Amino acid sequence: PTWPEELKDARRRYCLRFFSYLLRSETTRRNFVLVAHGDCVGAVLSTMPSLMHQVVEKVDYGGLFTAKRKRSEKRKEARKESRKGTPSMTSVLPATAEEAGEHSE
Image 1 (spheres, rainbow, N blue to C red):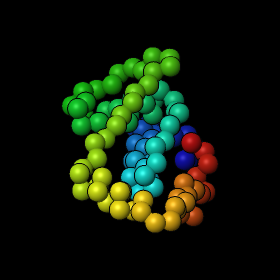
Image 2 (cartoon, rainbow, N blue to C red):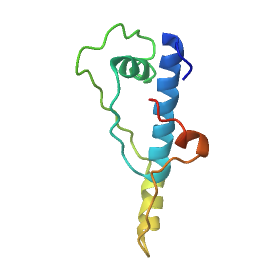
Image 3 (tube, rainbow, N blue to C red):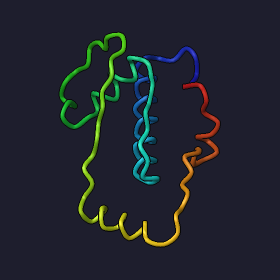
Image 4 (cartoon, one colour):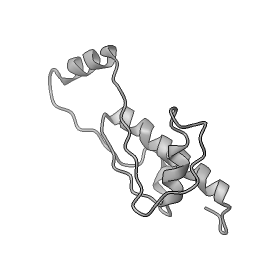
């Protein structure tokens, strides 16, 4: 990010990064543990469908949230089919060169 960074810009960046990991999780069928500052937790939490009309004013020290998604029956069947045959490896390395260059978060 360009310094000094406005808080609203940082929160937007946190959410975009979170969504990129969410997409990567779906693509790679892997889970992630993300560790971040309170501003990130608050920004991302306010994007959750059940809380998007609420304002997160404060995140206490050690604040966290957990989230999970339900898999559709169609996805479950596709996963069973993909497991048949040879085992495969999935990379969790950055998907793009631009993503690889962002180390400052």
